[in-house]
Image (cartoon, rainbow, N blue to C red):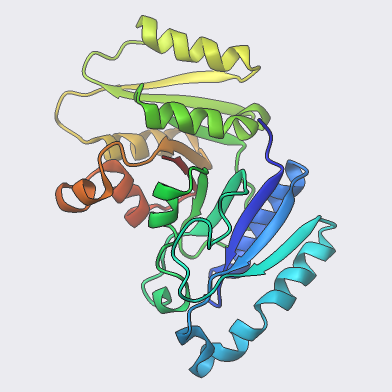
Length: 260
């Protein structure tokens, strides 16, 4: 698999410039076409954000042209809510930002959560305040739990993993050991793709949760990207009872590539 078409969602929020900068860097690295999709709401055209919203297409076009990329621009209808209406089906990767509490009204509410669940396309979610000045994908943490979702995420992230300097395989399990056959199997699979893998296992003793253990590992290794499956339970279940996906979407401090 290769990334040939990358969609970046555009709006008038303060995080859009950093999002576009990162999307351009990823597209250039993988020689992909960059597709800008304006997901502005009707509210975005009103008041102080109106001029910024009208300038979205020109600013995206200028940035893509200066980077020498093949690109397209689409404007989604304000009432759009499906993956098809938001131009996500014909893409290999989607790029968006964690919703900013002060700017939610400027962009379509289906992004990121609903599109992540329905599009069938991996999504790179950047943290609020992300400037795009730091490259991602050099040191990658793969959150692995042998599920369908994490399997999908690993294969969807394969172009990034192959290009990374180092990949850390994080496993959170009560019986974790580096020597476990299933751990060695996924490690060997990644290495067969030419990926340098370091094991970062965490034995679950019930004293901490998955997300806390994951971020403890990130602090040790200076990783710049998390790869993980999304919504092993239904989104409604995680909203009510909690879950790793909800925690990451609500509290991320670094880029996360998710697949469902």
